[in-house]
Image 1: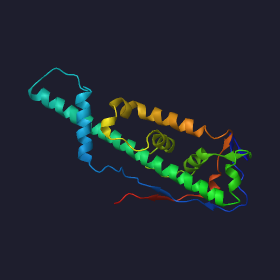
Image 2: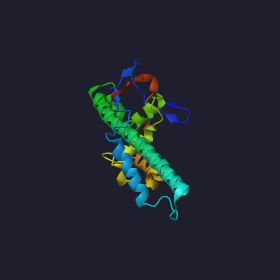
Image 3: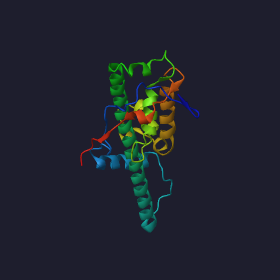
Image 4: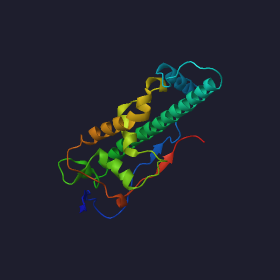
Length: 206
């Protein structure tokens, strides 16, 4: 099925298929925020992010305030990275569960077969979440998957440069996602979103 410039797989029948729930830890899983702040302060000192001559008095207090603001900014960037990674980790696990579900269902099994056209790929599940307008709290789904593809576990803040957190993480994640998405034999079609139901469950503790 082709609508506009988009291709969709043809799902037999007319019923809506329930997919496995997407279980996500939505709050950043960081146990010691004070340690993260300490790492941010160390990063600022080691990378000389504030280049100033030695001063005293009010000028010194202004420098300390700037260092504190920069450390808080680094921590916020890191927590945002962790949130994306957690979403990506959950999405990849959800995709594996969906693939198992499709394989067990004779009416869905052929949708993932690359020798049948139109067919879907692993990235089709990501596109489905985007088409379903899943509420992520500002997390970019493709970027989240790219983060998880790049890191098996989220490294501690001390492993990052400030350039990565401020400038590079999006481009790294986007490259990883694009490479992964292109592993499926082309052309890859999308799932019609009205034919599938997805429940997102917040696994973070209140």
